[in-house]
Every structure is written in C-alpha cells, then in structure tokens.
Figure 1 (cartoon, rainbow, N blue to C red):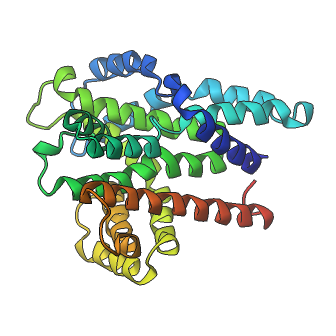
Figure 2 (cartoon, rainbow, N blue to C red):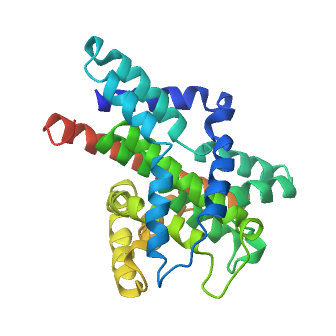
Figure 3 (spheres, rainbow, N blue to C red):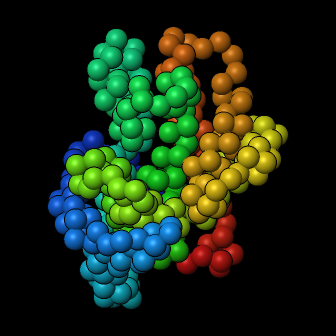
Length: 305
C-alpha cells in the first residue's frame, strides 16, 4: 500500500505541481519563528540540549499526521489511508519542485533575464551566489545534488519507512532548517558561540538525512558513470573531516559529480551554465528511477511494507 501511494503521489505531484502554490507551507514560518525566539537557551559545546528541544518542536506538527495515519490504516481496505498518504506525500515533496526550478533557471538564463536567474539560483543554493567562492555553474551543480536529497530522496526514504508521518517529519525538519538559514540575521544576533538554533536545526536535519543521503550516493553510480562515481566515494573518505552527521552534502557532491561524467560529455549546447544544470537534473531523475526500482524489489521480497 505504501509503495502504491508513493507511485501515485509522484505521478499526481508531477501533473499538478505548478498548481500547488500551498505546497511550501509558509504558515509554519510563524511557528518556527516563535520557537527560535523562545527556545534561545545557553548551549553546551555542540548545542546538544537545544537539539533535543528542536526535535520536540519539530515533532509537534507531525503528531496530527501520525494520529490520522493510524486511524485510517486498515479502514475500508485502507483506501482512506491510501488517499491520505498521497495527499501528505504531495505536500511533503518540495518545498518547491526541483525540476521546475532548474527549468525556470535555465529559461531565465537563455532569455537573458539575469535578475530572475539570480533569484531562482538563490532559492536552490539557499544563499547568494555572489557571496560564495567558485564558479556559479559549479555552485548550482552541487546545490542540485544536495537539494535532491533534501527535497526528494529524503522524503521518499522516510515515507517508505514511517509512512506519511515520516515524510512530513522530514519535510518539517527541512522547512525549519531553511527558515533558520534565511532568517538567521533577523531572528537572532550572532554571539560568541554562534546561533544555537541554527546549529540545532541543521544537526536535526542532518540526522534525518544521513541514511537517505548515503543510499542516494550509492545509487548515483547506477544512474551515471560507475567508475568515476566510485572515485568520488574514495575522494569523500579521503577528504571527510569534521562531524560525520554534517557530511551529507559532501558525500552527495563528491559521488554525484563523479557520476555526472558521461552526462557532461560532448560539446555544450548553448550556455555552459544551463548545460551543466540540465545534466545534473538528468542524473537526479535517473537516480529517482533507480530508487523506485530498488524499493519495488525490496517490497516484493517483503523487506519493506
């Protein structure tokens, strides 16, 4: 039933994605802001006490979904559960459609709309490209790889593991992290220890992203260049430093850029920036197909529900 809900949810989401302007629930922003302002407590090294409060704060919007999922399960041949699961999955994917954003970015670049291209790139990068080192093309390439897990594969993984509540839990954690990133300057001044709420939201999301990020990295070689992706894995382990839970983006970038090899082969058609962005998106879409095949096989073998 969960696998069926996943397939139907992905199909419906693709058909009506541009109509779902409410899919990014901005009404949660006020809830996040209130929590950030009222949970400002002195953090110990690593901000661990604040991480626990952030988890509790993240779980509160998830409880109604978990309760309704339990109520609908097994009722009327689980048809209400199926419809509810599809509804939650559609609103959990995002916060905006990655494919549509990349397509809009490429269209803006092709028609010479620099300001629109910068605006869309900032939404994908979660930062202003001008403030980051390196070519804009490479920045966007890396951002698409990391956002594929934040917006798509992480949701799918937790949906298959915990059902609608799992998908919504992952989405709430990502929305809370994004809100902290974009509003950090306004919500809380910088102190000597850094913004404890920003550290906590990133850590919580990193914990939930850890396993799906590595599964996605394992599947990148099947969707692109196997040998170059394996070289990316070796590069990741050779260069991995710092807290392991916060290395999700690094592994996706290292392996994904290696897997991109054959998709970037040949002479770029048009603008090199859009050529790279479209090739990266193709890798993500191919990886989605591999994800679905793997989960279908696991379901048939009884490994997943």
